[in-house]
Length: 127
Image (tube, rainbow, N blue to C red; front, side, top):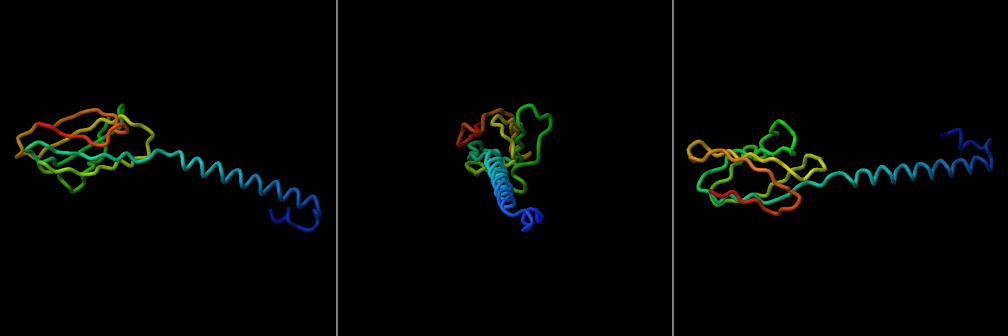
């Protein structure tokens, strides 16, 4: 690119330089729009209306064979509590399989469900 700016090219160098800068601008616009079209984070409120404590919550897009990492991490969700959940996996999908695991002393079986997380603002776990 340094050669194109060299005075040897005269008026043509200016024209070629303008073409190069126009092409670079177009490429930058393409890269910016590609970044803007990435999937948005899925955010919803998880409500526990059971009398048991949720110890772990897993989610995976429908069709993925393995559960991904525990969304709660070190947190738990006690009876009557709610928590904002953010799934920021970069995928452009809405339907997720979910698995809810209760503490052993809760007396509840683990639960699984499939939902369109893009369409809901909250999810409530019932007894």
